[in-house]
Amino acid sequence: MAQRTIECSQQTELGESAPTGANDRTLARVRADLERMGVHGAAGDRLARRLTALAPRLAHDGYEAALAGAALAHGVARGEREEARRSVRDLKEIQRLVGAFADELQKLDEAMGILSAYVQRMRTRAAPAPTASKKATLH
Image 1 (cartoon, rainbow, N blue to C red):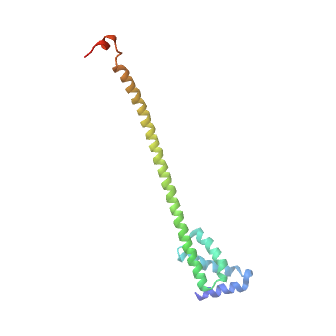
Image 2: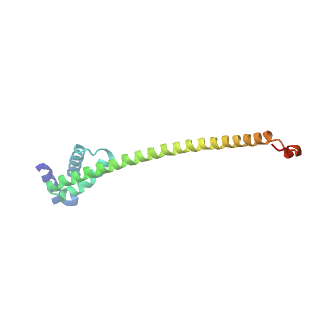
Image 3: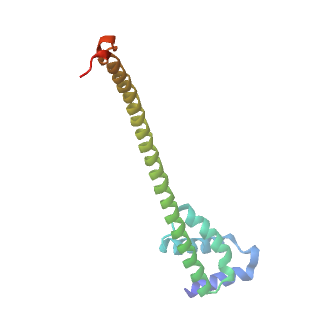
């Protein structure tokens, strides 16, 4: 841990003209620290580059706090991305179900139209036209 602070302070003393080897070593160390904290992949590389730029100005405790903050932020962002993926997947499933339900409602509507026409036809067949003799009959 003390070696990291020394390396960072040497980089600070050299400023922007620090040799790439020192920056590469610091970047590699920051990447390793981030991976140890669970930050991997492209996000880990981006965070490592940003933290490498900050590392020379931070004390050891500040560096550890920055690492912890970056790891926590990455964890929250990863959780948010996973939640968004689940939400999109759920939304697609809901859309599929509503579409299937709408198709079934359309089939029911067509069936109701057919039944309505059938009932109307049966009414016209079953009801004979009233005749004058039936009107006169009293019971």
